Image 1: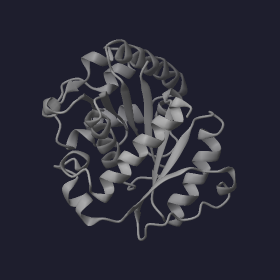
Image 2: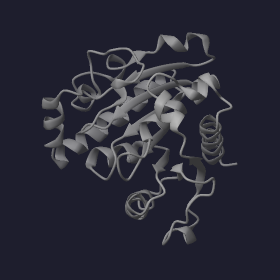
Image 3: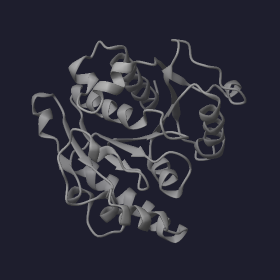
Length: 252
């Protein structure tokens, strides 16, 4: 059985999608068959990166119009790597974004069922790792992705606004859902993670503290650092997270 990782953030601008992409390739480089899907229905962005175009969307899967295998594409650039990567996108058209923004709780409950069915379909067809790039915050779709995950990676920034909402998300969603999770302090001004008030006493796991590196933002749209430069500080942090997740889920 494969593992499902939700990459989440309390607010936008944390570098969540870039981290999710590099996390996916890190697993591929270790020989895993990975599926990376964009579950940010209100602000999809994964389609903007260096991946093939698609004519089917995760929206279709959530609506029950098709199975997950019909809505994902193989990334051929990974043919030289030990593992493989498939990607799936949310529909970026404004009308689709508006439609998804108006969905009610009843629809979200059906969507969660379809997410769980998609997991089964992927794992039965050989996927080892499903990575869900969620929308930021606590809308129903993000919570669905977290509920479907075996592990949650919270990507945040060391500023007060991100910290405040991060603490609320941990205490209001992760802990009640009993989800194992880890925090990535991204775009830091030093290598030391900031303190997490209120929840630090509970043993919040800070998996990595990544310095603010301009080249990550510049190169991120066209280059995957975990592949092109595995010794880069950002890449090393990603591989550290892979190890931490594997250790947590294996019970070691």
